[in-house]
Image (cartoon, rainbow, N blue to C red):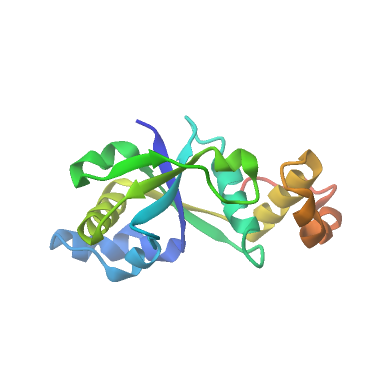
Length: 172
């Protein structure tokens, strides 16, 4: 079963903080905030085996925002969905990165299904982050490689001079 990714505020997904809730078969409310839906659909992205597209997905979501800052995410196995009766649908994403949009999926949820998914992610998922310095390098790389559309190149042009020549390591 493929892995799925959702961008979140990473501090809300610390398993230690959730442990007392999970022990009582409940979930903390804060992580649910990160699972905002539209028309009962939750936007997620399919992660390629061994995760080589995680940073591109996170970058794609980040460049749709107003600034480049730390981006948290959770990754979970799509095999968790049937237990919560959650349907997965292929749907094209709406980020500025057309390549990343192909990995987009929608999860069909209700309130109870969303809580069940939150619980499953807290128990079995993993959280991570891409730090600002790495995101800036990824944006510069995307500009150089033509993965970021021309209309956004001007918005992020300052990054190419900041990050060129710097060999930054993955910060996850």
